[in-house]
Image 1: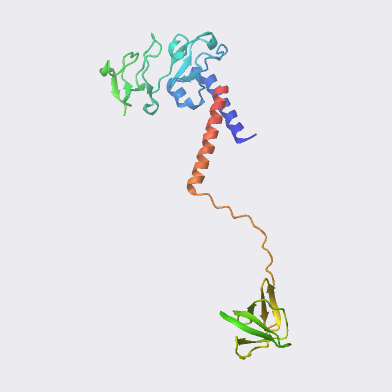
Image 2: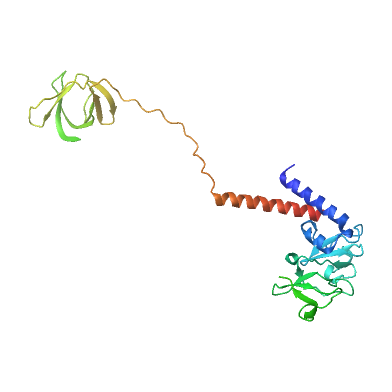
Length: 144
Length: 121
């Protein structure tokens, strides 16, 4: 087995392990292990995946809410918010761009961060925040 | 050192040959001209003179070539140097930058393989 094969096997094993454990992990813990999160595949059948399993897409980490076959849908997680939830992190160094919440899905909780278009990282000061720092400054503080 | 055109006479006979004379080494002389080889030694004179400079000790044909003969006065003869076997050039050591670039490429390949595995899962 070549080193390339070993790394490929390692990547597969890490991804499967994270998928199994994801339901019990926070968004911060999952984003910490983002290197083991597979990219969203619009042709993939996610029917057998457990709820909470993560994928990456459009610079975000999405968590499976409702197992489904993606090939039956024309959209991707950012447009399929009933099927995919958004993971947030409290680690400013791994903060991701702002995404509007969808109902209760994707709301920011205290301590969670996002990075704005200027690169400024904001830390949420109140649970269930749905507005960004530009719209609701008192709900946020600069994280770094 | 080339002496210009001179007249050579071998000790063994009286025929005169026009030659150019050159001292190759202390014990080797070169005679350039249309002359036969002879191992009796020779004398040299300026053209039209009877100098008879003594070179009777140069009796050994050191080397014979196209239009020249070399004589030695110590019995030595020319030995062609053995051809040196061709050796592969010593590969040059890669530079520090080359090593870093190679390592980075290797790491990138491993990262890509890891990511392939993640996406296959």
